[in-house]
Image 1 (cartoon, rainbow, N blue to C red):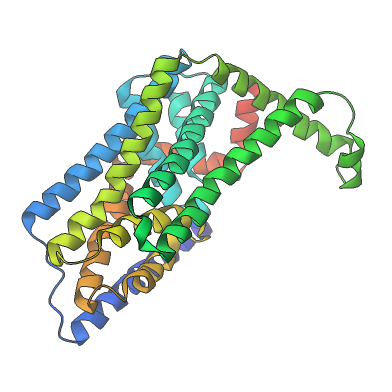
Image 2: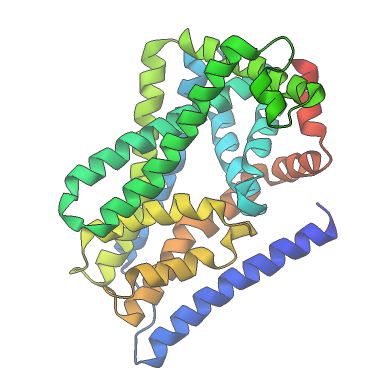
Length: 340
């Protein structure tokens, strides 16, 4: 990446650490204790992280198996971690998919196959999020506003993405060839832009066609893996916070991380720029003491963000950086299009 981009990453991470330090300091200033949790809680949180990464890798492997694309579990692990690193150093996690695509390509997966695997994985992610939101809304139905917020934000996001896919499929069936229809011309889509959209529609139609003919058992296994890996990620905060204060309400410890993790993905700064930390403070200020809040935040971010950055850098940092660089110069799209 360029020096300017690295400066942006450094500034964003500095802001993130500064907000965390400020929240920790405010807890100590009122006589709080250092953010210490039992060693057993650290062990459980670390196991939850490893289990989340492994089940996410299994999801990608089963997604590929459903599409009859051979993929090793080790490659799936690198896809996950490379995507995590690419997401962490780019605004709004925009480097995640390019990094995952390059890892798959380097492993010998054809460009069309790599795109299809990532498309299937995203479809399963959105579907499992929608289902999980329904389950959590039933389990924690007495939690009031936070359930509605979770359902509206995360469930709405998943529904929105899936709805776009449905609209895209309908368009792909009718408008993948030929001149722009009247409604497209009315909104300013001239012939050149419409041809670009048509190429995307034809690609989408091929992907949906392949997904329709996917093997059902591996697809079900991939969906179940998606549910499990999200559950492991949501387990981290309850493990940490309940070890510090056993009386905390479980519903908020489960539902708020879901909102913060997926809502924070739209933050324009790499790593969130402190937005996730500040939102965490607002979410838990009324249920956690200042000392507990600062400690819970520090360890939760360590196990759900910083540890992933380290793992990603070790497993596929160079590949992720190359993907981000290719994306910045527009070569990744050209590479994909040339092989389709």
